[in-house]
Image (cartoon, rainbow, N blue to C red):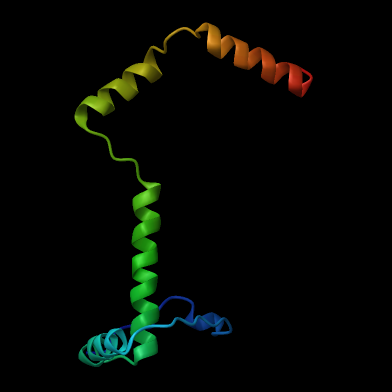
Length: 99
């Protein structure tokens, strides 16, 4: 079962990535690569790329419960008036920025 190569193939491969792994880890990765019809390098690069994309996506998305969504929208539509601490921070910021 052959799959499409990882993104970036058209750009050429100039960067290197090395990792020290145990023989057991290498055997596991080699077996998975063989079963997927890829070389070890292709399998490792594609797997790392998929994992990286998932981590980035997980950190880019904000997930809120229904209650949190309601509180968020309510605070946007009707924000609380600034308290003394916020007013003090704004004054300090304006002073530091020369405004």
